[in-house]
Length: 157
Image (cartoon, rainbow, N blue to C red; front, side, top):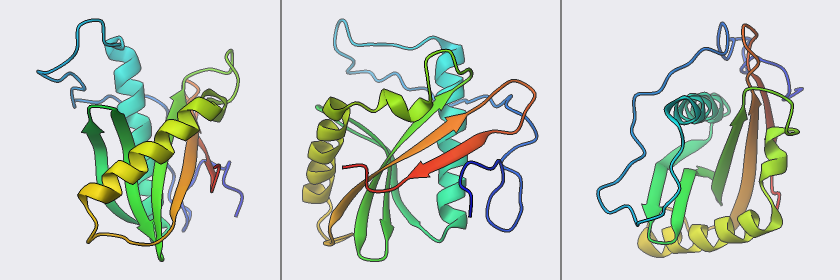
């Protein structure tokens, strides 16, 4: 299956167009002074992409164990189990192509952090998955008025 197509397995479209909005707030009462904050439109686009990614993974038969898990060291977008693997899935969503493909934002430093956070998640939830840790990236390009284009990169590190 071509994972860059804007449909889910079974032919269901990811969306009619890229106009999603999110209602979940990413702010937290314990936010550190100077911590990064995104403008509302950016957060809404990210929330929209994460919902599409979760739906896509469920359609693929992947079991989602956690979403937006946080600890003092960072956040994991999606924690899942596929077969015996514990899958940490980073979701990157962009509304244009001016800065490259969304997955290009997942640098080697980010990959290292995801691996560390995945280990911390497993330490907190040892009963949920003891299999090997895998890091995936779901890249979503969401151009106005067009269906979202999703690309799933498995085992990036």
